Image (tube, rainbow, N blue to C red; front, top):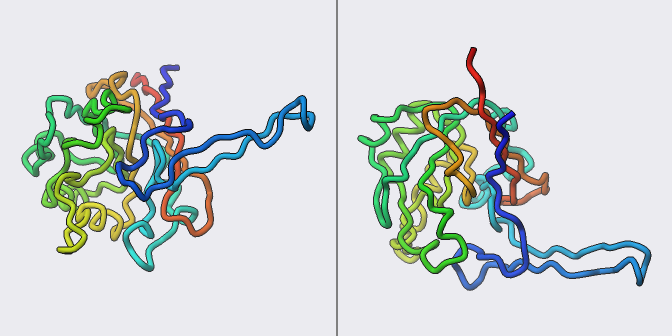
Length: 221
């Protein structure tokens, strides 16, 4: 079985969200075998640390929280899209989507995970136009995964002008299951068929959660 793990490791000091206010990840000891007869650790992290899934509540005041998202969209056939020709600051357009087609579950591979733990990771990553996101939803997409930090233009966020993360808001209003910060997408081949499972922790009332994302190649007889 060709099974691949597309998840970043959770570790102390890992990059988090590119903002000063986000909780840094801290993994410390609460007890050791010598002290209490077992190793036990304290894990402190934000809901959007590393490879994670967003819930509508992240941007929608009365939105669905992570434990109530539709599990049936988190497991099943997925269409892998190779956008590794996209460069820093490039935009995925409606024309790009028409060229590759729309499926219920879609995974967009930009190869951006190569910039993990560098200054470039949050700097001008490729993103989707609002029109492209609306086209994907209209075409029936219900699950969207990517190896970038966001489907939005990270360089043009303006909370003051009400333009903060428009794609997030459009996707989450429609309860699209959205996974960000994928790792290791170079192992995937857009010409092959895959099944994916992406499961968040079942945290009651949360706007998101770290997720373990696995994908396997499906052999067509």
